[in-house]
Amino acid sequence: MVSFVTPVVPLFVPGSRPERFAKADGSGADAVILDLEDAVAPADKDRARESIVAHAAKLKSPVMVRVNAAGTPWHGSDIEAVRDLAGISIMLPKAERPEDIANMTRRIGRGVNVIALVESAAGLANLADILASPGVTAIAFGSLDFALDLGCAHDRLTLLAARSEIVWRSRAANRSAPVDGITADLGSPEVAEDDARHAMKMGFGGKMAIHPKQIEPISRAFRPGEKEISWARDIVETASSGGVVQVNGEMVDRPVIERARRILRLAASSN
Image (tube, rainbow, N blue to C red; front, top):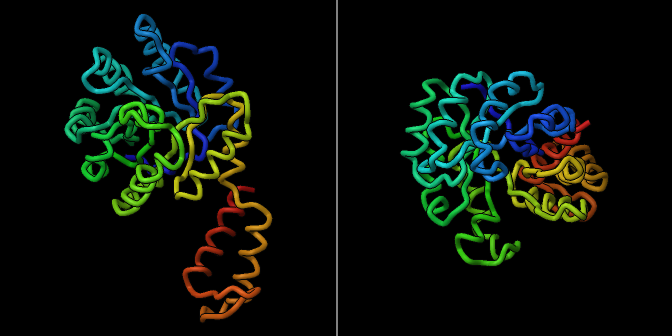
């Protein structure tokens, strides 16, 4: 299985729209999610599979394929279609049972990165077992479907506990930082950026996008700002001894210094 790094902004593209694949590939997204599930009507599933098989290898960006969920009429055909596509990752929606992941990876017959899309109460309840499943490298949070499953509001306070559990369980399982769900509002890039900043503060490593104009706002939210970078520089420069000191009136010890160093590394990698 190839190594997996959480993409900050993976972009969804309907598998039934191959004319959009190249545009998505050049959009600046960190990965392209070729979608066989919600974005594709039942009548178009076969054509979408054929398009993905024909074009996925041509894309320069990392490619994920979101297959249809286990138990649907299309899941088996999806797996058969993509099993020989080298280098792709597979996103499994409605991830709820470890045995579904095991069955899928067994049918693929080789090491593959699996991003388990948690979208229900059952998925969250089984999160530890899902994370322990061979092949699972990261969790993605399908917040809209999760709220629908619970019959709750799709807002930050209501979903706070779920997001927090996804983050800390991913870390405890030594998996990549999870990816947050989409922002459905396409009319305001500021909303996507604000949602992304909330996800970043909670410990998510990225956030899925559904339109190219969301890419830069989401990416910007995950980059340290100038004020944060300045703070980190002051901390590292003043507290290089590693002991407990005060910097600009703030008590600084090892965890604070390590956080500052992490911010500077992230800023350097973003340039």
